[in-house]
Amino acid sequence: MRWLALLLLLAGCSSGSVERRLAVMGTSLEIHVEAADRNQALAASERAVAAIEAAEDRLSTWRDDSELARLNSGQAVPLSPALAADLEEAQRCREETDGAFDPAVGRLVQAWGLRSGGRRPDPEELRKVVESIRERTDLVLEEGGFGKGAGLADAMRALGAVTRAWLDLGGQTVVLGRWDIPVADPRFRERPVVALTIDGGSVSTSGNSERGIVVDGERLGHILDPRSGRPAPDFGSLTVWTADPLRADCLSTGLYVMGPESALGWAAGHPGVEVLVLRPRGERVEALASVGLKGKLEVLADDVDLEFWQKTESGGRTEGSRNPPPSPNPRGASTPRKS
Image 1 (cartoon, rainbow, N blue to C red):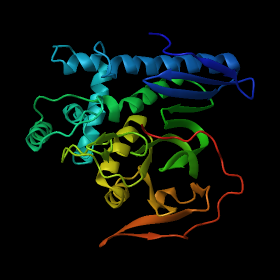
Image 2 (cartoon, helix red, strand yellow; image 1 turned 90 degrees about the horizontal axis):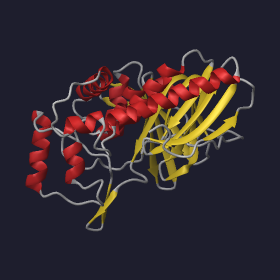
Image 3 (spheres, rainbow, N blue to C red; image 1 turned 30 degrees about the vertical axis):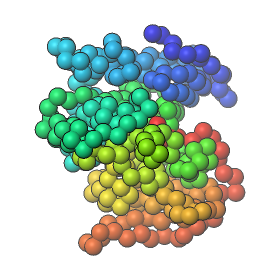
Image 4 (tube, rainbow, N blue to C red; image 1 turned 120 degrees about the vertical axis):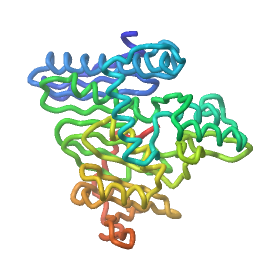
């Protein structure tokens, strides 16, 4: 399918820039591309959109005809090089997070009824599903934790020779050049409270604030821990910044499952990965950031307390001023987020 929804095409602020908005992968895609002239920018944006649509055709588990869906059905189909590369990177993220991220959570998604209104699996059912994930038997792969990242990675490669670019797919962002990326209050997704300034790479945020299920009157999050089989505790949101979009997508999920302190400790031992945790504390928001984000964060609201987390022999500690003054001109751009 060439276009999945109405496409809005806007001329940019200069002759060599193009902005596009459309629906793809079941969510919204926004593109801003700058090139030597507008025709080059438009052609680059078309290549990026085509790459994301191809990723959807390859990875969607909401359809029966995608390559991944056919693989899940047990059909003997050869893996395309693109799908093989996607799954190899997802497996690498599983290994480096010790299973906190796992692409093979499809049966857990089914067990909790995340696509059918919610249900609570009985203990024996849950035990069998977790055992199958651990033993790597009867697996069902789920693209929800890496599909957007795979699409954005393909899109960036497809852009070609452009001078500057910004793509946001359902809240995950990838950029070429220097950009300010707002990060939302986990309680109010339309309220940016921190801005992250980056000069490349991808920003991915995971949280349970808007998605989830209600089972027997209890609200449960949609992010599942593959190790226990249960929904991960809802503490707020966790944002990852790293070079590769697919890795950022996987890690924001896996590190959210680990929890704030464990995630920050993990990032301290993995150069090239930075983490920002936003955690509601009464009427305030606690922002815990890895030290690599020093000089790259700006507080946009006066109810945010920003601290930087450093690993120590005893675990970790935070440093930095609490409640630094907010920017006099808070940026209200669309807030990057992971659904």
